[in-house]
Length: 163
Image 1 (spheres, rainbow, N blue to C red):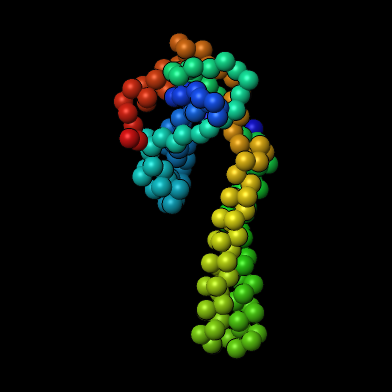
Image 2 (cartoon, helix red, strand yellow; image 1 turned 30 degrees about the vertical axis):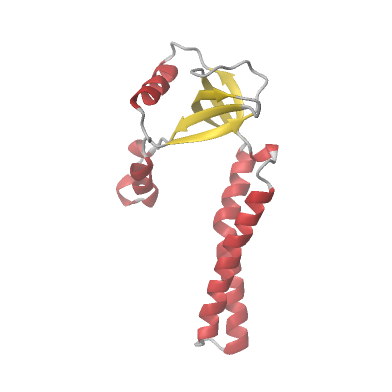
């Protein structure tokens, strides 16, 4: 299970709103100077993201929690987002090539149509499965208030990072 620390910011009838701060493991990676993920991590560093989570725990704003997301859901979601547009683009490029020849503008147009169709499918799928509990983060546990992890989250929340 993938874990991320978060801060409870609101509790309402829908559930518990938890805010997380985007962090990156790039500082310990030897390939950080040649990696696009490292660049994106620098751009997004300190930004927060809010999640609605349902939990049986009694939580209040200011509580630190550990969120979890199943690895299977993460891998399925990643494969869908990255592979579906590419596969549909390649498939329709091959169709365009078979219909009009290898040097045809139709091959490019079919490829772009496949790419757009793949992105549209990903959007449709994500909208349709938005409430699927398999793809939702869950609260694993409440963190102790004076732990080093909790102090780091408190510092981020007080500094107003990402707002």
